[in-house]
Length: 188
Image (cartoon, rainbow, N blue to C red; front, side):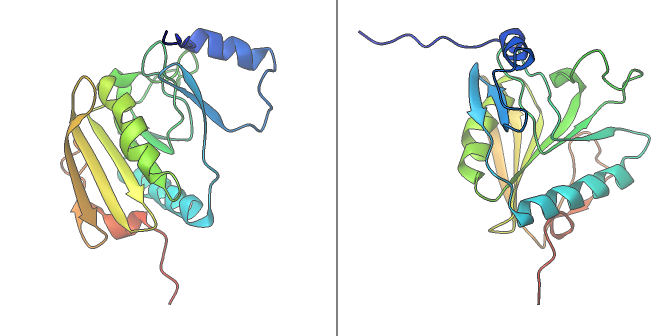
């Protein structure tokens, strides 16, 4: 007999956090009804995340909000905390809810030790929720994976760009991003 797995809802996840079940400094997120431990952040990860945040804030000032490691609610069973989420401006600055897929323009995960998880497990969760533009910045190989055309269980399109290439966010076709500008500077 196959064991049944009980999935946790977003509401249950919030109640568990309020009850103090998780340590205050515990790095976790809810994806697909499962509580997932987040990978530790290395210096390359932190540098790339900071560079990406600054670049998008500058390019999209007054047009979109750049949120860093803040929850987005994909559905009743998933509330990940992506490294970067570019979301619609909200009159209440999301004080009454976390952004939902209809309010998300772009999700970016920065990968140093989490490339496989970000390109497979998380990509599937984002695709199932209809996130149209999902990027994974691979700081080790210095590449950008762009996932588009979300389907029921995965993205239909994945393009991998080298650091000397440029990318354009799906919702902002006038914005051109140099991949190298997202990556940590190379020490000579």
